[in-house]
Length: 314
Length: 280
Image (cartoon, rainbow over all chains, first blue to last red; front, side, top):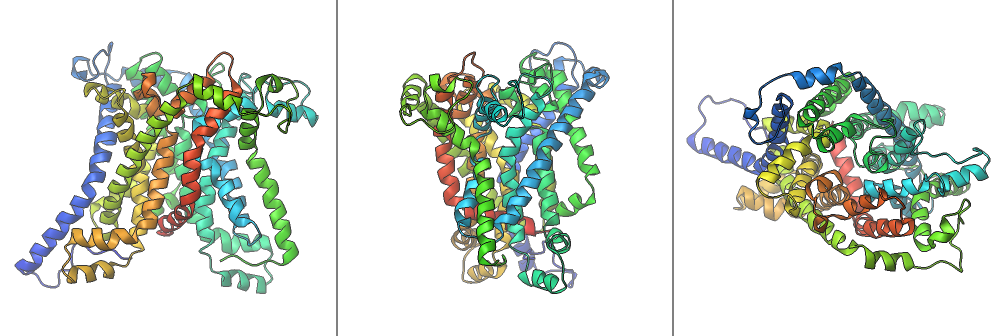
């Protein structure tokens, strides 16, 4: 650790005035350098969050969002949302979407990180290529997949028909049964490189001697992975899964342009519902309450994700 | 450290890598392919998988560039991305330094903020932010998109930067301070030059996120003059009969700046992830 202690151990009960001045200067500098971060986070996260909470507790027709005190305080928004049977469906869809993206993306990322950690010719060209989707804007990914998954002329249908897997065309984005899969696919493609980035860095820090020792003990590749590789990358993998998971849970950029939450709400996750409530139906109070509930659900899921996560940030 | 397998082993690894890469790169290949083949050849039940030599052309690029204000969208994206990436880098360099060098409450708060900021749904935050900016007359002003994206990236980039500052021995700046530098002088003249890889990683991360931002730009820039390239592209998707060649051409054009930036700065980013996540 290269951290300077802010409070020196109290060996002498009365520090000299000069030392106190030095400490004050250091504390001042510590807060001065942190203040831009605090200002940005405070102004554009904490304050909007405060307004959102306020908004979620107001009843009546909200006409002026800057003078919310005109509207009476109430918990009706929460009452309406929590008694809406559709909420459970939205939560389930959000979880299905999140797991449907994170698990395959992690498996793909881990597999590629393990592959790229081996020496083979051309590795330097392959690595940036497989990382590339991360640099592509989500909306462009959505556009590319909406074309590939097009019902009439999409190449996916064409390839599957040629391979004899399907007989007729599938309307991936329009059919209620396939729409969720069709929005998950591009999201996986966008998110797997992040896992490579994190995991490859970890793999490269595992000392080679550990593998040599394991091989000398006659450990199979699978056992080497379980006993050498996995313990070394587990903390970073957990962190990456959690960060990605919460990101995907509130993801907007893929579902909204592809389906807008349809067909027949088949891809309406919480994030999409909040947006539609606010900017389509102008139910600001309900949208805000839904957002707060979404955060609470996120918090519960995070806590359930266990202690290993908290250790990472402790 | 990676192991060095035998020669046949290495070639089979290469074959595997090429096969996987081919599948993963297919969407990009298909975008390129679509952009150079005229619509009448594409809108059939069995489109060609390779660009037909007799029909391939760059017409889609020419027509999309003349029909749609792609270059204005690109310019708007460039302004917001540069602004947010520079702001985010400055803020997180200072913040990362502060968190690395001083054990304040801010340190624990930062870990919490990082997680918490990810938990805040963007679709929730954008409602009050929209009102806030509307009040200051900043809706349809690119600064609003720049600032929101700065805020969206700062929690992560600060954590990323802290990892890089942690790797700089504290003795270096102590020596500079003994030589008569103030704290600010030591930070600026000694630490910042050593943080170039971290600055590169932070800049890349913030750029890619802001360039790809759709939610904030779509909500804050209602006026088509202020559209960024993502908002412009999304406006294509909803249309009744989509000009697929044109859409893929715009998509590819929009990818170019970030792909170049990414290829140049990717090694720093990989290193940054290592620094950041090694700290347990």
